[in-house]
Image (tube, rainbow, N blue to C red):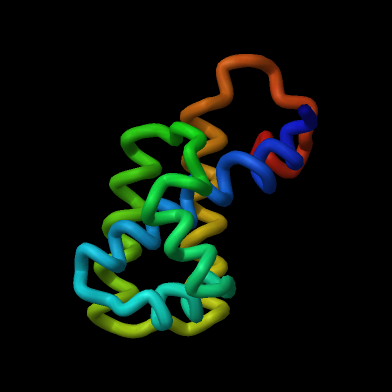
Length: 109
């Protein structure tokens, strides 16, 4: 699997799952969570139930997800800012999981 496809198929769903779980623990409704994640309430239900996003990400990435989830629920979400924060978590998750050489120039940064 190419590194970028790994981000799309494995890491991003795992991050979305952690965000959904974290926001629900903060008392957010699934409608709000779906809006923030840019998905449906059914997808949010699958994240929370464990049917989606089962890829293991590092403890640091999970902690970053929970911190972002708390911030999103307390302060609201602006689409551009959420994307930037998620991109930072993706970079953290990639850095933590990258033991082998990574041929992707974007992900290697």
